[in-house]
Image (cartoon, rainbow, N blue to C red; front, side, top):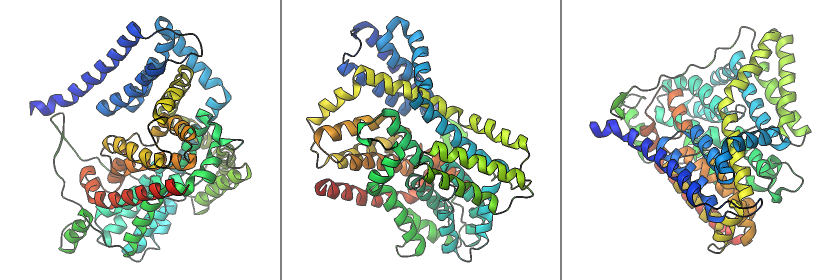
Length: 500
């Protein structure tokens, strides 16, 4: 018991000690170079620090803040406080940095728009009434994530709460319902132009100012060049739909879950006691889906989605314009139809900004890290070293395997792309590998982590939305299915690496 009580504290002590050593080593031994000179191996310390810290503590935001300070410390030393303030100001006020932050703010507003109005819940319930069998109910659970892809958290929460009572009636194990949500929400959010993951990937590409983009936006480059090679989310979705349709029978522990129900057992898996630092953890209570307002109908969901897509298309998928004009159109329509008063529109804006405060904090620190490391010569150094060791033919496969291993241990989810994108692109360009294929391999590895890591916040939310089932049990129930998808994807990256 004592070991359980102290394990978390020991990890935290190790994490902070590692950071302290990083600061100490840099302060004592790292040379102070002239502006524009390459710090070479010293630039590896901040990426190593953020990885070790987050792996040990699971505190992603704190990891980004401390690593941003560490990055600035390399350059400014005793003046690092002023340098940190200057770096934040420079990154937030320049057009590219503000564009990324504004994009996240708008995404938060859209999420809150559906939350306050309850339009997302109304749409999900309306669709659920059409389900006449377990297959139709599960297909609806997956497809409902398409119009809600603007936020994978929203799609998981709303769909899980609305569909789970229905799938319970059809005697579907809740592990299966949660699997459908996990296999659909983030994957569809990556494959669709209004998807939160796709928008984030495009923003990261723009944030780093990668030369391969040309005159396109990062989002347009991702959709026109990289999307066809995002094998893992495509294979994962197809596998899910084939299992729902009965073309492929459930296997592994998912098969055992179905057998449990067929033998008269509950659709809810038996809860097992979980301990964290010696304390018994109660299963998370499912957060209820927001209730629709009195005058909400189907159009109050359709109009915002169509408006965002239409304006996004009109502005060549620059989603700052698509989301802004989509929100304005939605506000006007909601007020005209009596769902909103003008004050509600203000609440959407303020609550939307508040909901994205953590993401914007992390993004601001990410900009400091990205641009700080770029100034220190991080990308050039890593690219130069790694380029001598890898083959262009198998680089995409190596990227997929390497980052899949790290993401399986502790997933960064889409924040992985912020750290690794310039390295992947730089190496691909340097060795002559296919750049879109390399980016797709990185994207696929992040989604693999979302599906399999026990630290996946998306997995936690899916389990909570499906009645508070155990995350570990649910993850193991889909593990063999997801591994098969990973193997197929790895083969495809190897084949296309040879072809292209």
